[in-house]
Amino acid sequence: MRHRVFGRKLGRDINSRKALLRNLSSSTLLSGHVVTTEAKAKFVRGYLEKLIRNTQKNSLVNYRDVASVLSGSALKKLVQEIGPGMEGRNGGYTRITKLTRRRGDDAPMAKLEILEWDKSKVKSITAVKKVAEKKTNESK
Image (cartoon, rainbow, N blue to C red; front, side, top):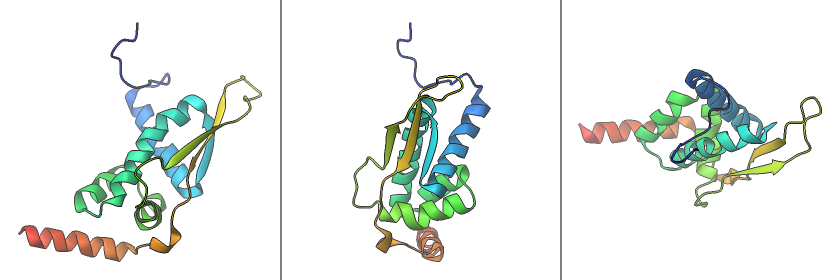
């Protein structure tokens, strides 16, 4: 019985699951969509939505939380474009679309994509850092 058992294991150990989460999240953020199995798409969806929600609030703690998980161009795109562009939404930043089964092993496939965001609200990374520095100086 699986009563009160939280999460999915996907046949991997904890480090492999964390790497899978980070890699699929980064790929989805950079390209806008990723095609994977249904189980992996459902596994990554909640994680990705939390990352997007954290970047909507312009605070140093949220920025550091996201930066500890993502790096490089995925972090930059999330903080500058996607997060501020999704400010009007209260949730539902991603969509899972079922596709045909994979030919080799008949695995159910799905497309995980980020919904459209308002591209007029793009922020520069320096603006985010200035806000972060201002808040740290105020706390001193």
